[in-house]
Length: 518
Image 1: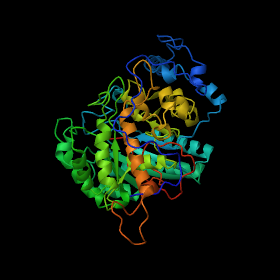
Image 2 (image 1 turned 60 degrees about the vertical axis):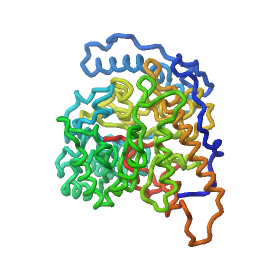
Image 3 (image 1 turned 90 degrees about the vertical axis):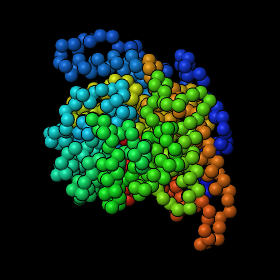
Image 4 (image 1 turned 60 degrees about the horizontal axis):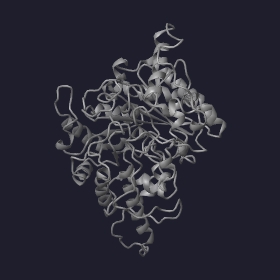
């Protein structure tokens, strides 16, 4: 699982047990002025703290104005400090949407206690229809095809999501994908459409797997580990554990490797990292996505203390086992992405690196939103005020929330812009930068963990590059059949994506589960 360093930016200094902390982030944010940051050059005044001149023109307009006020109050960056027109004049060009998350169901059969959709700040799901109607599906297909044609996209990726998308009957599961493929074939015949469904696994049956396979829809499953003890927070609405049903579904899925995208797992400091990793391997996942808990400066993650790196420690225990394993047992997306970025290769993640975000979410009522992970910040943080009936996806590109996530370095705090790891870290996952009343222009709440993790992996790659190559056919201790950096060149069709620096290979497939946990 090693590869010589042949390209990319110089590797950072070796693993440092005491990463340099960012400035005291409990104090008010510094002025953060940068000549390349259009946001600081032309700030906008806050909108009025009231219903505004559109009051009385209808509930949708009133709601949109209220949402603007909410954005301005909670996140001045970017909502009152980013001038999108000035950014465009300065040379920042929008990147088209490449991934569309279809919220086919807004309800779930589980009630996981940490769920960012149902248990965190945003409770907008309560106002959503339980399921996406055929009319909304048709309109979504039309808008996606329109966008693909306008930008000559070689490929668009669909993610069926919820809620729990498998609450739909087997015969209905493929309807959204079929509609999009038909519309895209008519408007942009050169565009390929890939599809994945993200599920909690409890409703996987032979019938559903057969229907999904027939439609070419791959399956990603969210799980907290491969043992019942790892999944005590994954319960149904009566408090009953859901692990047994999920494990049964995963065993069925493992018999259909062509449909198996992989498993997502949120890091839990209360669980042993090696036990968690090894137990997930029992389900033969082609890929494991290890996700940091959705947290921010106003709502820090469990175990967060200045000067400590508990999440890096947890992840590095798994990395060492994975990196030195003599057999390729699975891919671990986080590690492969870091290695790819260290080598200067393009990636398709929005959790690391500087490439532009390129994901749109379509809710069951046809509203267009940003990535679900923003729901962990504040009520309505993912909302745009746009709908399929009133807006195109090109209009979404000029929404300040999405535009800010396409600015690269110019969207980052001055501390991040000056950091030698910025090309790899990219400031960390956007929701992790949030602080109430300031917005999303701080270093990640996991800054110290990310520094330690990246430096350690860089040192491992450097050592591997300096190791003499063995004779042909000779076994290599700690090596696997496929180097991780090569694996990262396959584009993930299922995780929130970013516009790659160059077009992905046409044959790339959904090698990872989506990072939008169910």
